[in-house]
Length: 389
Image 1 (tube, rainbow, N blue to C red):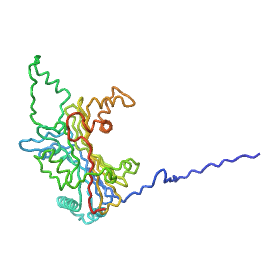
Image 2: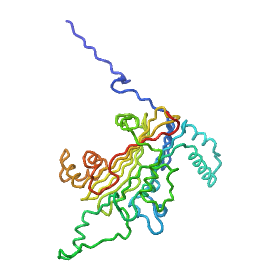
Image 3: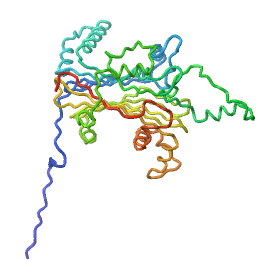
Image 4: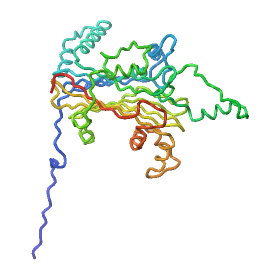
């Protein structure tokens, strides 16, 4: 009797690599450094440091407040949750930083303690600053300097709480002949903390700008080194296909700068995120505003730079986008989104969900919510650093 035999394929402990399904990704040489409140990556010509600290205490808030405003203007009150010591610092130098930090550590005298060691560390930090040929930063101070102080005018996108009109009507008599009362802010400023801050180069923005308006801050940040991108030039646009690939992440950080619940009338927050992949660096700074019953507003800053062939020179692309829409329109889209949940308003507290809905609304970058906010629309720029490629 003949028994047919079946050959069972042998399973290998080593998975088969299929270059069609998943191309090989070369991991660049990089170094990760960590301390209790900061993380750093050295890769290619870049040194990136993310500093994350607890909410500022009273002395730290007083120091930050003094920088935001003194004298007659009084500045602005700080948001409820202010992370004054948080920052993201991106540095570039031809030839890179790998090896320099190790050499500096070897040169330190291990017997130095106390004040001498602190002085040595400060000197090293100053040397590092001088080494860098290009620095770009995101921090809480300059983000709040972008908030409008004083009376709001055209383009500032002023917002009233949803019950403002009803409150004013309650202060009048029954006669229609009586005029509506006028209200005057005792400390005028943009109470929503709206800011179009998109980062800054320290050499172009001074921290001693107590009387600087948000318009001046924006002009300082958008210095002449940034060039308007040509929509037909692919290398001066952010490559979404590359960013959506499932590449390994070498470095990731989330840096909150501030958050405020607007006296229970909504929420205002600014968070910066960065991820470094084998082929590129990508930063997303997102300001999100929700004023209950009135509007939603988002201002995004995206920064991209390739890690390929960047030892002597590279290009940085910066894209800023502002959206705005009435509260009820976003709410209606939310409750009808699958699966429909008419009583669940939780998605309206999610900045990612809000940004997705706003980006899909046709009027969100044009008329917005009718406030005339100058931050609406999209702008793409690029900058060359180092030698020409």
